[in-house]
Image (cartoon, rainbow, N blue to C red; front, side, top):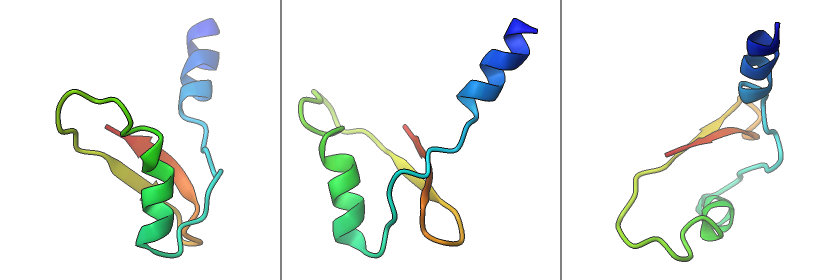
Length: 57
């Protein structure tokens, strides 16, 4: 039961930001890119309304 609840919480949709252009995507990732020692590849998953579902590294 606890494992099922944990998996459900991990897969919850974020839906915090709406992306209408590259500037919005930059603002979302700006805080993540502050102090990283190497280059990273990130994905921004959006729904049909351009709201953020998940950020994936």
